[in-house]
Each structure stands twice: as structure tokens, then as C-alpha cells.
Image (cartoon, rainbow, N blue to C red; front, top):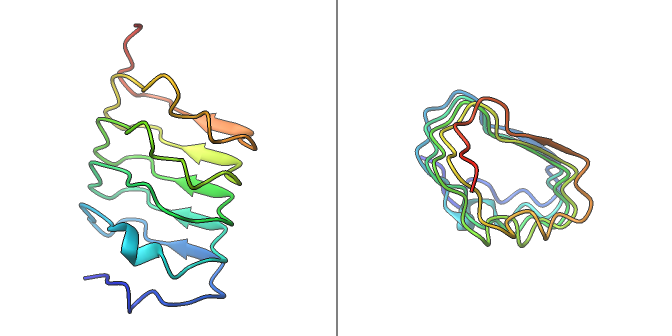
Length: 118
């Protein structure tokens, strides 16, 4: 179990939670990581990406999860994100403005999702 007290690490820059069979990560669990630049969430069972307040995040990698939907506000607090990897999930459609807050985004990987044209 990961809780907010476990991850009170203000200087932590990289967090790799790959392959832990996580079904969800509450925003409060990551709230005490203001210096986090890289978050690896590959090979879990995540169904939803919450709106995490990560002001320094540059890389978010969550391939091979169970993501089916992205909420319109999923990335609203991640303006510094440069690389977003959501490959090999179950995303069928994307909200119109979901990536709008990502003004510094350089790499977007949506490979092998069943995206449908609107």
C-alpha cells in the first residue's frame, strides 16, 4: 500500500513503480513530490490517470496498463511535461482539449491503443 506519508520526499526526482499491479494512485500519494521529474508507471493495472499536481514533471510513462479513458483535466497540473507515453492501453477516444495544458510536450506515444476516429 502506498500512502501520502510513504512518499513525503521533497527532493525525489525519479520514481519508478513499474510492474507493481497498481490499480490506482490517489493524487494525495504524489502531492509531496514537488521535485519529481520522471514517473514510470508501466505494466500496472491502472484504469484512470488522476489529475496529479506535479509541477516539475518532465516524463510520464504509463504503457501497458488498463487505461480506457482520459479525463479532460488529466494533465491540467503538468504544464512542464515533455514526454508522455500511454502506449498499449485501451484508449478508444480522447477528450478534445486533453493535451492542451501540455505546452512543453515534445513526445506523445499512443501506439497500439484502439483509438477510433471521431
